[in-house]
Amino acid sequence: MPRNSMAGFRSFTTARLLGCIEIQSFAPHWRFLVKIKNKFSGVVSSERADIARAMIRQGMAEALEPDTGESPSGLPKPGDYRPPQRNWSIDLIAAFDLQDPVKKWLAIRCDFHNSVTFCTAAPDAVHNRKTWDGKPFCSSFGVCVPPEMLDQYRKQWKASPHLRAPLPERPSCPENESMKAKKEMLDREVSSGDLSVSDPNSWS
Image (cartoon, rainbow, N blue to C red):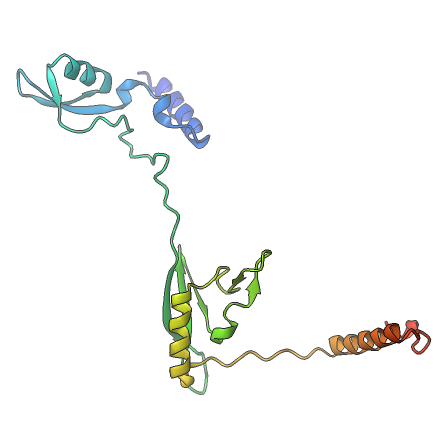
């Protein structure tokens, strides 16, 4: 086949492959080779798939490998993809404590694809979020921690107080506290039916 035709064929098959269409549906038979053994001469060779199949049908040769009709380039086939699995474990991670450089914290570890994520929360606070249908999950991982892993973490947490990470402190926000107080005052006025006590202009 001329070089220009080969370049056009590669471009065509690549474009069709990117469109999720199997490349073997459009490639000619000579693209696939089948290893056969000639019954008369005993010669072993790799022949074009269409020639090899014809020789096998006529009893002139026998196949030495399965004729799968696949590309010799080893391109993946539909169904080959396997989604990555999460690997769960209990680990000790560096506490980054300047006063105690060797200090470690107990954590749940999740290896997923090419990333590693940890959660050092207390066992009862691991599942700190809920999905739209009310199912709990851990915001560190984005999924629910397996029950057996959470139970194992809970046991080690109770048995190792010195490995517990400190609980995060709730940040103080004066603006929020002020808005909370004003809301409670307004709620009391609404419930009592008297809205003349407070000046709405002072709420902002």
